[in-house]
Length: 284
Image: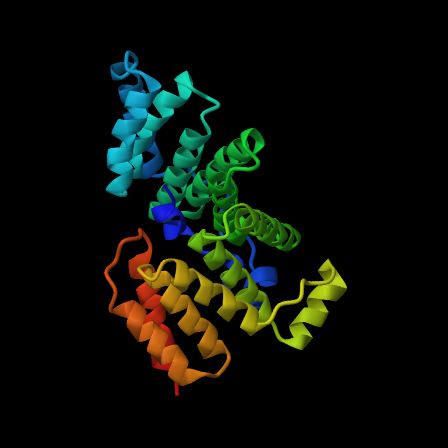
């Protein structure tokens, strides 16, 4: 289930404090939805009628086929119909939230990104409320929160970043072998570790004390993620990014190059590789 959880996560806290406290939502609430949302609503309306006689389990299985193909609109036709039959199915809620995160990645305007992202959060929150001890539900919540951070006001961004940490810690406490949870935690540490003393002081004056973090914390998490699952290219590239921020260029080049040579299996692997190439160009 967890194989593509992180494919659409891009934490707003994964760069620097300017990104955390300097951005405002780049959209107008009055914008109309584009063709992606319109097509989704039409497809779901048609599918709901056609599949009404099928069981929830049958619908979920059919949706999983399109989940594996990274086709969220098609998957949702089955998942949302199944939800009408089993609204408290945690496994289903987690799947639905993930599809909305995929749609968020595909959306071309900020209004749709926000709507899809917040819908993903809603489904993850429902899953956690039903099964707080489920690591997949907690991980879905952490990832979904990360998706909406860039569109929140500064104070809310910082509040959400703390919730991401809480959720990631819960996943690891329940399932310490969850490589994606270690990836989430590593990015969280890397973001905060890269904040300079001056920026940290300014943020503390306005928004309260930021949690302590070191680059070594991020490295430890990424190394753990790689040990648990060496086949995810994101683990290698993120470890390389951590080394780059530490000024360890040789190590950064080693792991980013390794990640770039790996097969793409996640939805955002192309974007991750693009980031890796950009970092390589900036190394000395």
